Image (cartoon, rainbow, N blue to C red; front, side, top):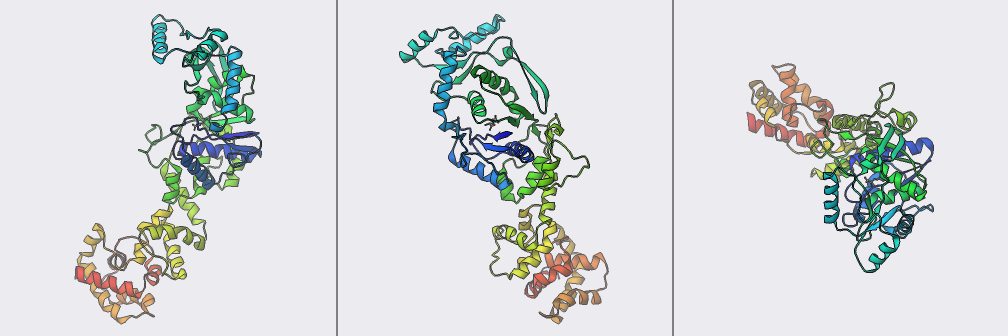
Length: 476
Ligand code: GLU
């Protein structure tokens, strides 16, 4: 079995395409199949090497290890379509000489006019160059007349295939819209044409791709047939929609893989989420390590209807994968985010940093969540947010702040971790929430957060003093 992922390097790796890449990978792993990367850079104007590099990096980051591609030639290369022009040219000659394709010398306007006329007369559109003899075509071409090459679409032919997800799919060739261009006037071959050649020459056995390509399939099948090339099996993955059931777009949330990486999503979470999109395990279990995902995955389980992308669920999954990391490794992963929030970590003893991370890790669903939390520990003083501010203005809160101002002078570097809260408690006329909420608000600048007993040692005596002083000045 040989599968392929065929990105067009015209931008970043889109989450929908990443899903296609992941599904192909699960199948490849399950069947021990070859996984080919083919770069579809036929759109010379929009394709860039930067985009190719970034897509390949994102695939690697996701954990996809292809076995053949631009960097691993196993005899089916080149793996970039822009480097395969000679191959395509040969096949174009074949199609023309066998009468399956023809050079068309009509202008776009002429074709448009003929099409409209045919439509008005309720007749099928037939290209006026379709019956030029090969000699006539060659003569006109030799005269320097500009031409495109068009594939001759047979009339009224049923094109049927068994789609691994959609079941039996049948198209009628008459609905293709007439003869279609396979080589543009600048000599560039078009996607639908060369995909059939490449899939055959690269011996791809299974094409698994998004449903947006379904309408291309009959064209690709006709071309393969005309060239006497084998055609692969097909599976078209239903589209991914946003929560409003509209096609997934930036309006719904992040759509490019590099941004997920930047925000601190973990590749294992994305692999899990994308691999499970559109089907469910029998037990309902959703957190599936890669090996289990491969084991349980079966393409026939994928629902025929579109999948809804649930950003919250992905976040939740990510949080669960974060929990699996040892604090040491997680600290390394979080340091860039902490630095990015403007804190230097180099002066903080590693033990202290890991202590802080072990307290905050459960509040992080994605790595960048640390940015909004780390200040609890590393800022000298935390400006209270609006809600905390009005809370600290309450009478019982000012009582606690006053007591804390006395207590902070009674404890020292050695004793503050055990005595600070204990002594406030001793002296406080308030109990429960009216006691603990103000302490938390005064010490952290917010109303919820980590367990204070655990947090205070890592905040340190110096910062604790500053925070009590600040609250006292501001509220008392
Ligand atoms: N290059 C196409 C795309 O990026 C994929 C073509 C295919 O899978 O057949 O959408």
